[in-house]
Image (cartoon, rainbow, N blue to C red; front, side):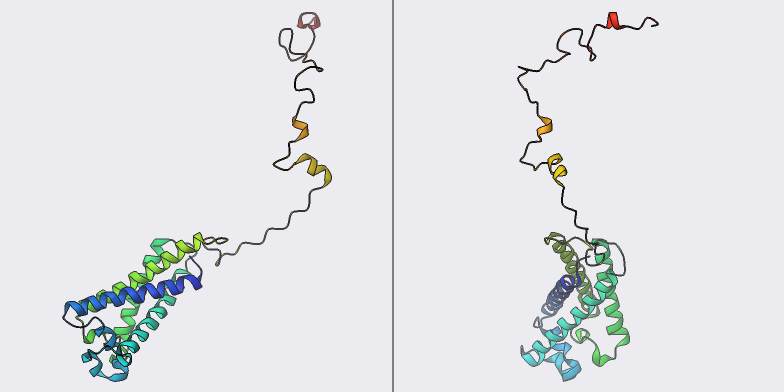
Amino acid sequence: MARFDLAWPLAGACAAVLSALVLGAWAAARGMPVWMPLNATTHALHGPAAASTTALDLSHTGLGAAIHVASCFFWAAVAIWLVRRVPRGGAGLAWLAGLATAAMAGLVDYGLMPARLRPGWELVLPPLGVATGLAALGVGLSLGMIAAGAIGRRLPGTAAGRDRYPSAPRPAEPPLSAVERLRHPAPHVLDQRQQRVDPAGAVTEDPNRHGSGDKQPGDPTHDERPDR
C-alpha cells in the first residue's frame, strides 16, 4: 500500500469526480441539469427548495460541490484506514476496501443520518440512481488507491509497504585495508594475481607439455610402487 499522503488525495479525487459524473449522467437522463444532485446536497442549509433549484451558482452548486468533495475525502480516509489494517494486499484488497466503504457510506447516510443531513441525491434521483452514485464512489476509491500504489512503486527510493514497514538502516561497511584493496581491485583494474608473468611461454616451461600428459612429472613406469 502506498503512503497515506499519496493514496488519500488520489482516492478522494477519483471518488469525487467519478461519483459526480455518474450522478450528473443520471440527472441529464431525467432531463435535469447535470449539477442538480450537487444543488440538492445543500438542502441541509437551504431546505427542500434546493432540490428544485436549477441555477448554476455558488450558493447551491459551489457549496454542494464543496460538501461532495469533502465527503469523498472523508470516506477516502476511511477506505485507506481499512486497507492499512491488513499487513499485505494488492488490487483485490483495494477493491474490497473501496466497495465496502461505499456500502458503509450508504448505510450511514441513508440509515443513520436524519433526513436533513443526507446527501440529497434522493431528492432528484431514483433509488437506483442513488445506488449507482454510491457504487461510483466505491469504484473511485478503489481506483485511486490502486493508482497510488502503482505510482508509489515507481517513485525513486521507495518500495511497496516501506512507509508501513520501514527497513532498518544498513550499517556502514568498514573501509578496506591495504591488503584487501590489493585482493579486490577496482572494476577497471586488472588483478595482477590472475595474469601470467610470461604469457608467451618464452621463459617458463610447462611440465605437462611433453610426455603422457599426466599431471605429475616423471616417468610413471619407473616410479610405480612395487606393491601395486
